[in-house]
Image (tube, rainbow, N blue to C red; front, side):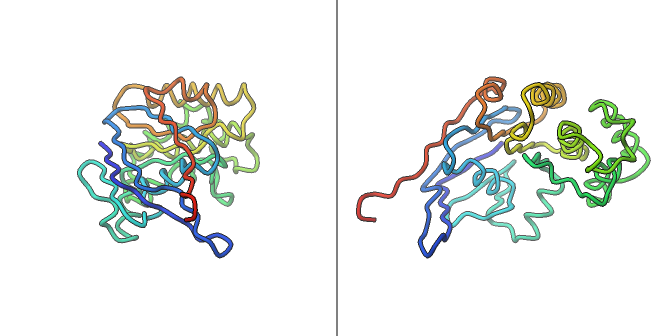
Length: 223
């Protein structure tokens, strides 16, 4: 489903270029659940940003379902992401001025899909994540675990073929993190969705089909 070919990415920091990816290539099969692990600075989150089209590589290509994401304009990448990709962030990224139901419906509204049938499906999903009784609550009225549950539901409500998760349990305590992982398993474990998760947790990694260990790039001597 995903082909990453010869990706290069560097950022300008403190007047110097910091190389994050230098010729990275990999493939991910449809329905595969992949964990990206590695030390800080190894490029895990950068890879998610490149796959989702939130950022563009300096060189190389990202192909998803035959679509070369790197050949699209920024607006085209945004539209592709909005329609086909779900994203779960470590810090939830809920909109504080919208209540639970409004946060959940937002991807459907942006895609022009908020009809009665999809609204009913979204409310069923809200029941599955255990928040049907909190639909009028605002994010600051929810616990961290509740915020992550609604964030997961929001990432899945438009039925994406690809789910990207960046440290989805990183800010949660162990028990709450386990609950969130169980929820992710139940919602994405039927093989119909490809899942890529960035994590520092080996417990999270062990739940995936495959683990890809990234190592930080080190410039050659004198470079």
